[in-house]
Image 1 (cartoon, rainbow, N blue to C red):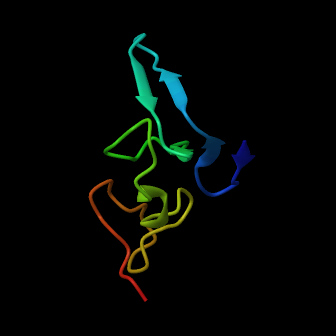
Image 2 (image 1 turned 135 degrees about the vertical axis):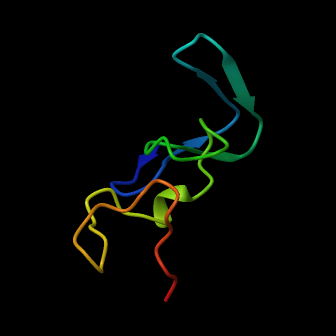
Image 3 (image 1 turned 180 degrees about the vertical axis):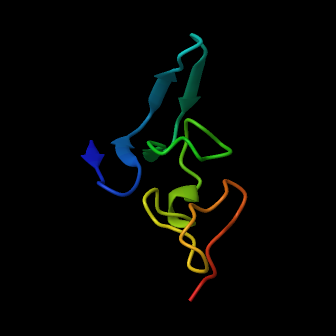
Length: 75
């Protein structure tokens, strides 16, 4: 298992994840990225949503926190 500070947890597969509600999700992939930011639309699997917005960044124009639906411009 590899824990990334700003990203997902990488686990050698196959993997079963049991959610808070008791549902079990399985992946047979060789390496699985498990979401830790809870922004992924494929949760519990990572879809790289953590790359779109850092949790502590403020809005560049007025200092407010970005809305959940806002994405940062790509370089």
